Length: 111
Image 1 (cartoon, rainbow, N blue to C red):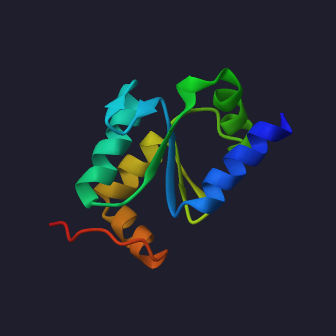
Image 2: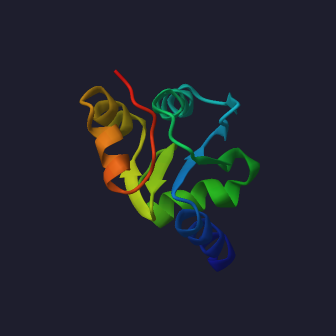
């Protein structure tokens, strides 16, 4: 299991924004992953999507890595931010954009 943990760790630490999701940003395979993709695309955040459906080991590994039971999971600058509900609430409150900018991640200006 350490191999998958090393892979997850390198993705989390090697990308400013990474979304572990079901499917890909271009073709999400679940509604929750799709919602987070829509939010990130809307605010113009550059992110990497990692499809957990490619491997049962990865799907289980990310849950253990974050100690969070659900997917999708968003990481920013190596920090676990949350799943769909948390990201949606942050976005609706205008906090997600501020959080990303504070972390040094550029987003487009949104109304």
